[in-house]
Length: 93
Image (cartoon, rainbow, N blue to C red; front, top):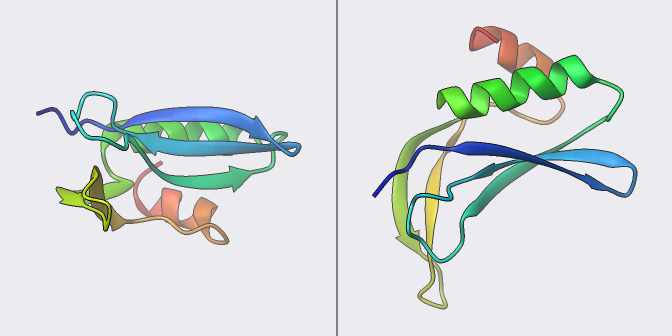
């Protein structure tokens, strides 16, 4: 089972939503946490996506089951929304 995170981006209500997905994890729910970012801030979006795919945004990954017995990838989130830029810098991105 491959728990490598993959970053995805979509537009939602005029914002960019950058999400962590686990398409190779063989789980029921592949999408994880997402961050809403101003679409004009392309550098921040690129840094976040690069950090996600480097495996530093979601750490200590585990397969868990929800109350409906569906599997998903759980982990510790290392970046926050309001302090996203500072957290990415702290992680080397």
